[in-house]
Image (cartoon, rainbow, N blue to C red; front, side, top):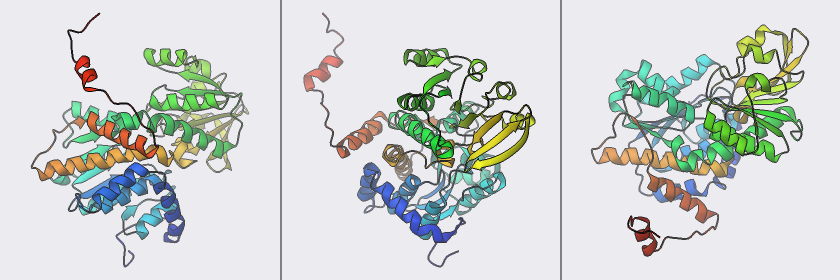
Length: 425
């Protein structure tokens, strides 16, 4: 505990100066969130609210956290992935008085200890990326649930888990699916994941992507973004899918589509982006060519079955940061990046600030909506809720204005025409 600070545990508080510079850079690239900070720093609409957050500790996340604080909230934070925390950013937040429990390279026990620490101040709002915080509350801290107004969820994997909970009648407070906003998953998931994933691959390997056979597992928003960016860098992109319509979209985008069994024999670089376990398993490892590179950009580290890979391996050594060489018993070398965790955050810096600007503006507005409903004596049902179309369009409009881009508006006559069912030829 520092005399002017909150409670925290970070790698090294001496890294704070570097972290402050990173945060300032992100602030200069996040005009929407900064506009919200300026707007609500005077009225403090979140005063009296306590937000427990479990989300990657990046410079962009720090901008969101500081905006919550400026709007009056108390905040307690942890990272949502053992390898995604930037230690200098965590130190800077601690230096600013934020209660934060996060450091790069923690083990699973430490990861959940950090979540437990964020809950000690008894939050009435939660913010999640992957639903681990919400699951911890539901599984171990039922006593906190009556005091929680609601929460928000940032990523596809978390939304899937929470919808399953809601369908089973197990979700005990409402959650807003920020991930499902158009201004989130059509931008953050596509353009953010596409760029940051390949950034992570390049930083961990320094290989030339042009001419390589890059296999992208999954053609959802994230996989589509990765495939687009890999194609743009001159790679020959192969897509694997289980959904017929997604496979058809990938085909019509010009990508080769095949099964992973087929792709395993020809791929140079494999990137999983499915949110499902066991995408690369033992039979695939036995087919990989010498020198194949495998990594994951889905939320959890179960997409590549490293337990099965180790069974066909005789030695493992670190070649360079976030790059481990698995030497198989038959003499092939397979390179695993970022221990199978999020390569874009573990080996790079995560999504660019410009795209996270909209995602985190949605987080802020959704938390504010939950707080305002509470002030009016209202509460959403205990299920997963979408953000409003109006909020989506408002945030997109603000983003366009910061880019000095103007768009047309419907005339009154056009609006009437759009709802006039009698109009015809």
